[in-house]
Figure 1 (cartoon, rainbow, N blue to C red):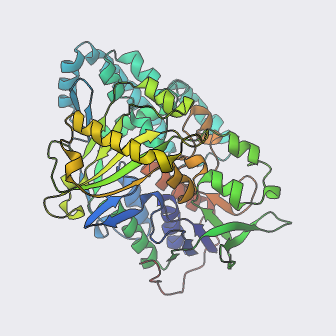
Figure 2: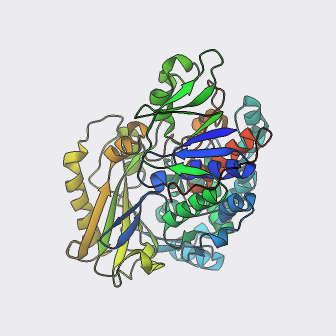
Figure 3: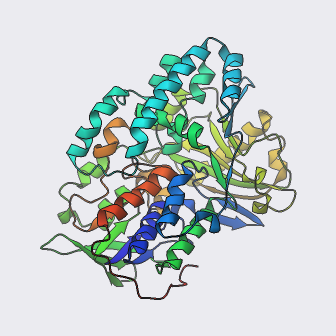
Length: 505
């Protein structure tokens, strides 16, 4: 089969590599000048900044893509385990060093609130049970209601109908510990008080498999997957904007794509890694969409957006770990501002990524490279003018980091800088409402209730990426590629005879 993949994010590359390894003829088309989608890499002034994903968990999922093609991931890219996974900093000056060192975790919990030791053991047991029930489903399709019904008893047993914060708060009493063990849904675009308790499994996933860094930055993993695709004979083309997915009138089957310049590329199947809202609302004609109607797409709940600063400094901030979670003065109230009220608050919590802690090659000698992310509302209300607000918001973040002593005199040491905001997600990344993570991971938008990997409306159209099942995060997005590759299967595959292409290298 000839298969066109729209988008070279992790979902698209995962599907493309697997399908090419099956023997299909795969062509990846990507809008931007470099592959990666949200995992784009910005290079300026001698610095390299990962644009999006920064955390690798469940490395076996990555390894499996290479093994499926008869290759070894280690021959393409190097992973390094981090310790600690994160430092979690609180306004009172306390710091929780989050890692997989069980003895150290218990020691710290005791220092924060000795009474929570018993509660943590219960939380750990609950998270372990959820992990054992939910993790095996990460690469299984939920395209049929019966798939959901089969999983329902286990999901009820682990109380998936509750929220992550609801579960955590029932076991722990210290507010700081409650935050430390419930923030993980934010990495997936979810509100900890709204996201299904299934995501408590992330704690056990990290404890079981660690948190890893890709040497050379996350962009090095993108390059590795592109090289794998090309080594298997697949092709990738950059600066190729797909405007429409072409569909046969009678059969309602995808038959290819039309590019912005008018070029038509025919295909036996189309795999789309574009934002799910943008895909259906702008790339598939309305007359073909009975299930995924405008009404349904516009009424899904979309994740928050993000304001991300990419900062290079001429000073090293050795007080900071590879990953820092900086909790502001408010937790649930701030989350409600972002997710529900769609308000840009004066305070904020931040995620600070310092890859030069582990890999100095990402910055000039003696310098540090940072990625500083603040969750902000998506553009549903559309009342924030980021062309005006961005500078003020940037300055407030820099001042906060200076005033709190996290990054003293930061403003004096910045020698390279770039930022993205909701306008970037909506415009450059074609993300509906400027969402940073696609569809929000609530219970009623998970598994069968989430947009399916095989279109209900169009035969031969498959969907991968953060907005589809199983959801956002590198493990989930890569797994969506496996689900689709398994769906298409190898039965109709014909051995690829073309020579590997150098396009997109």
